[in-house]
Image 1 (cartoon, rainbow over the protein chains, first blue to last red):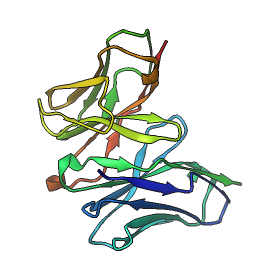
Image 2 (image 1 turned 60 degrees about the horizontal axis):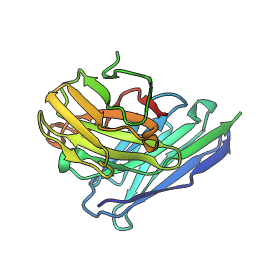
Image 3 (image 1 turned 180 degrees about the horizontal axis):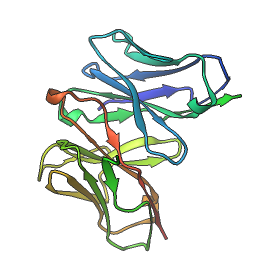
Image 4 (image 1 turned 90 degrees about the horizontal axis):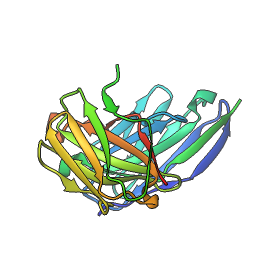
Length: 113
Length: 115
């Protein structure tokens, strides 16, 4: 089955700096890669996603890049703000099998004011 | 605006009890999932369903079963609760790929403690 590894497990940055979280996956058939943000005590929420036919996607201060050859994808957050502090999860899924996702273990991002 | 509802936010049960966790979604999603979330282990898939009365095992199905009698409702059953099933349980739903899969919508979670 699919295996997703996520690094780092914790990340601390100063407000205004950039943050990068990286994930690798094992199943070359995976073709959909969502990222979720989970604030303390709340449910995970989808913040951005990318499909395998796209190399990069951007939405305001967040962007995701995908390298299919190397089987890794990354989340980039620019101009970080304290409200970006949360746990971020990457995931990978195929288009088949109900789109079930395999998740990374999560990265706890702390943005210091 | 709540779209995936889990019946209990906190639950305390005794070892050996049969436990039912309920999840209801109002988005007409075909796919529904049950994950458990443990510190340092991320989200692990227990069971999922892609249609009414259909179910498939995820990565950690042992000790659990599920029921999906209606499209909007997906129930997780702990046949005989054990202390190692103490965890946060997250329900999620999604559209199928053919209808524009855009990730999951999660419920708020049920924090289950088995004593």
